[in-house]
Length: 183
Image (cartoon, rainbow, N blue to C red):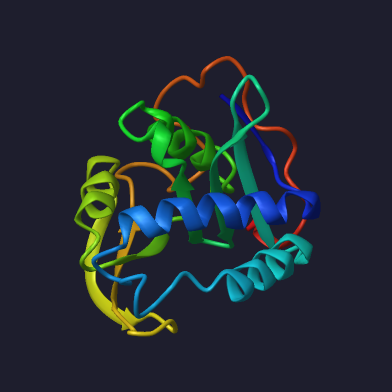
């Protein structure tokens, strides 16, 4: 796994990967017949976030250069996270998670994210990796406006970010883009 900072040149491949994963993982939340993946809106959002120095976007590539995963964070919030469906069950998501944790400043006491209430696979993943539901919920801005649950990570005796739970496969993160709290 090559874990690196994303650039604006990655925007199209990011949205392609996110669409492929979302259509499979969230078909029961966003039925494609009535709520197709909003490609143009998501592409515009990726371009904004890639250009925003307050947002840190990372991708993983396989040895052939194919994009296999993505993650984006701002300050203490994990904004986006996903891997290609062909990699599911391979351990890549855990490696991406661990690599991402090393990019957060080590002085943060809490990290947080939102996950769709009905995305049970993702919820199991986050819980397996030490994230806990807070009891807070919101709704997605995308129709049919499904419920999003807030999860947080507050490690005992240490900071929330700045360290990985396990070794990376060979190569660690490249220098992150500068910005407030590198998020």
